Image (cartoon, rainbow, N blue to C red; front, side):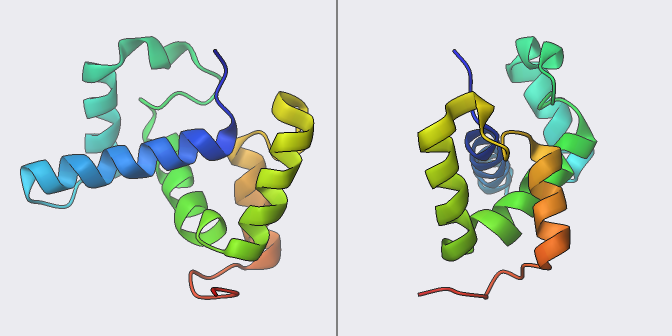
Length: 111
């Protein structure tokens, strides 16, 4: 099974929020990466491993800045639906580049 970049970003963000709620504290990117490594050791072999703190940081940025923007997220979801894993947005790194180019903020284009 293959997960799309947007799905991975959502998964990482939700994983972080669940763990923070359970532990009743904010977690650093390295703490989240360690928790992933402990609970899902097979993710270390992924192109963008969830056990890498840089991937955690980028995925949370994408979720908060891109996927919370309904207009931009809609374009990404449409592309993923049409193109699947060959979508031009199917990497966390590419989604970070989109965020940087658009300078998306959390509150832009919310309906």
